[in-house]
Amino acid sequence: MQGADAVAFRVMPSYATCGWGGDRQACREDEVRCVLDVYFDQQRNPLPWDPRMPPVELDLSQTSSEFLASAANRLMRPRSTLPGAGVRVPLTDPQTGKELGWMYWDKSGSSGWIGIISYDKNIFSQISMITIGTSCYQAPGELWLTTEVLNRSEVPNSPQLKHRVIFPDNWQQRVKQAMAVSEQRSRAFYREQGEKALKALQKTQPSQSPSFPQ
Image (tube, rainbow, N blue to C red; front, side, top):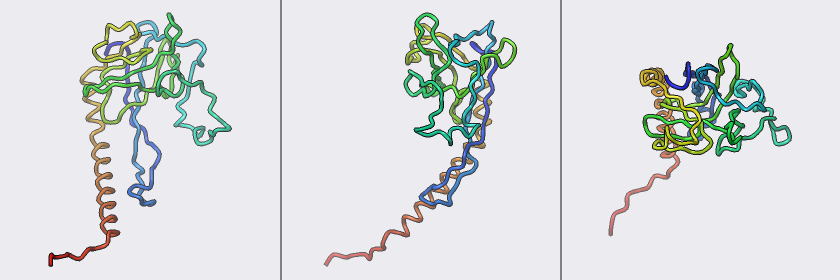
């Protein structure tokens, strides 16, 4: 691994969703979400932390705060200036003062912004950690810390690239294998709900008698 010192891929239970195929009773209770915990030694792989941001931010999905929030009672977290990032990223370009965000790139050629769920600037002695939401179907091959959108051809020479993490191929393969069972379960659920919806649609369609030319 390059650019980081350790990484953990975690599969976390998510909330149940109901109403599949228009049926209120059709609920899926085994949904998951996937996250990366990436650890950085502050000497080998220091990150440009924004000193104005708190030293620790919690994962709000592990609390009830998101359910209690409303237009009149907003969560008191600064908003990001980056497209689609949501909550402000706690990293800043020391030269320009611009907010930095993480982009991912995977072996399929996909790339885009990826959000920080939580972080701890000093989770262990001289060790920082960021937790990032990620796909459950394709592990990222790289992470890019940047102020602007980058293309794969611009890495690693772009002046906008402030930090680059490269994950080992064998780690990506282990993630893919770990998620194989979950992916099969998802496909089976969607297939079942699709068949139910098709049968329900067929029942609601009036039967038509065949007509013959005179």
